[in-house]
Amino acid sequence: MATFTGLLPELLEAREKEIFFKNFEMRPLLYPELVEVRKSNKAYEDRMRVAGLGRMAHKAEGTPVAFDDPVQGARTRVVHQTYALGFRVTMEMMEDELFNIIQRMPADLGESARDHQERLVWDLINDGPTGARHTVLDDQVAGAALFAANHTSLKGGNVQSNLLAPAVALSVTGLESIMTMASTTFNEEGRYTQLQQAILLVHPDNQHRAYELLETEFRPDSADNNRNTVYKSRSGLRPLEVPYLTNTDGWSVHAPRGQNSLKYNDRHGLDFKKADDSDTFDQKYYAFYRGSAQVDEWRGNWMSNF
Image (cartoon, rainbow, N blue to C red; front, side, top):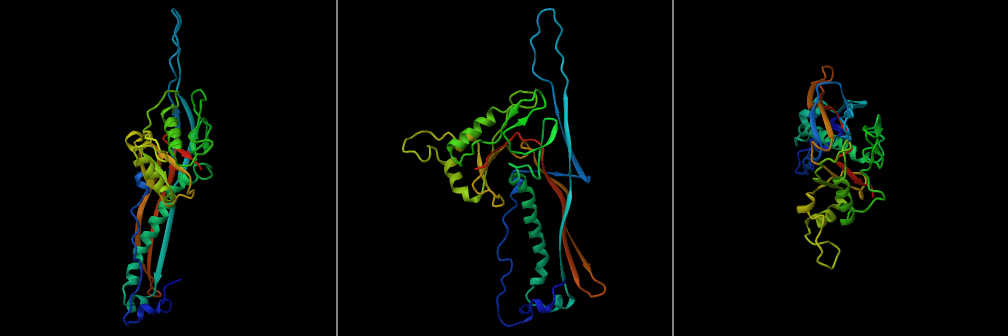
């Protein structure tokens, strides 16, 4: 299908008028604020988990030292996909259009690609409680949801949760619970690990509540002068409002980019191509990119799926 002159006749008429097209700019990309972008030079990316040595054991006098071995977990593969969109216009439309709308149409391919990429990456969070499309490496099996109450360690089978149960609305109480959960998380070997909490991820519906919680020095919703325990100077959190989140009431806390294991694999960056149809003289424009979104590790991500 091509854009013919008959589809947009107003663009051929020179009488005085104003054409509204692309009056609003897209907001800057949001996912790079939380998700690490990695270049890839393969058709896929493999991932696997290895647990190191366990805890030290008591050695009684005259007895041998206990030995331990690392443990290898499951391996999974994320295959890059290609996403594309095209636009075709007749020679006559290109020549006769008077308002440069058609000339600007290829730029709309770029905005379409950016919107698609945002939706692709934020699906890591949207799918986080179910694991239907994206999973993390748990125990000897790959296939656990990012947010779950029964994450199992390779070493010793310790079970941990990064999901508030029951779920709690965005509040001082909810944030306190997640901060405690984060501070008591241990690694594959059963040792407590240092996980910094940096991002409070919310839908714009919750942006005002997030500001109130993180920017108020004294406890919100209280007539007393009790200190706010989740005030940003103590919690270290800053809000990130993302309209691509499908659960408008749910919220999550994340370690900084590069520490939370959320990744976008950039196999081929956004690219544009142009071609002529030798039979019709139509102009054809294309935009495409290749990549994949993945998450390997649940640690560094905590959710209240309210």
